[in-house]
Length: 229
Image 1 (tube, rainbow, N blue to C red):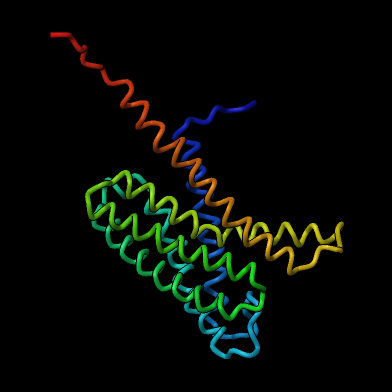
Image 2: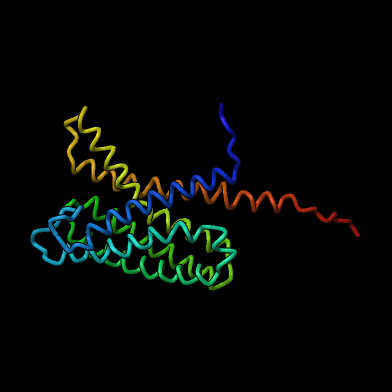
């Protein structure tokens, strides 16, 4: 026997899945880099740059924090019932993105994973800062819907960290039946796939869940008949 799930129920399930997966990666990553043990780094370190590990820590800790905060910023009850808390968390989120993105530029420069991965993280960090700036400018101008759209894009880029682990895990599983797959190729593909997939999913959500209802609402408004004079 199957039980139909309402649209609001599906949204709650999707939100819960988003929040739980983001929290899992945030705790996993944050705990790793809180120890200060460079040998526990999940990212290959450049042996010629002592500060490489430090840049990864400065990136990973605020990135973990914003992953935790993000889902609650899209919770309608929080938006409607506690706007001051939403605003405070928004400033924490914004500061975390800025620090994490700037540290990511430096960490990518020191990366030993190759030019393709470096370019991917440069582009991701740039898009991260750009979407954050556009979202902040929109809310300063009182454009709430536009603010929401830009922050959906921004958090989708943040969520690429979660998608990266998923794609990387899938790639490592595929190494069993396909031993010719090198880790470097799996990692590079996972980095690009996580960014592209998250960006596409965000645009799909924006078009079908945010813009389409606004267009339908506008088209359903009664039109005033025009008469020739």
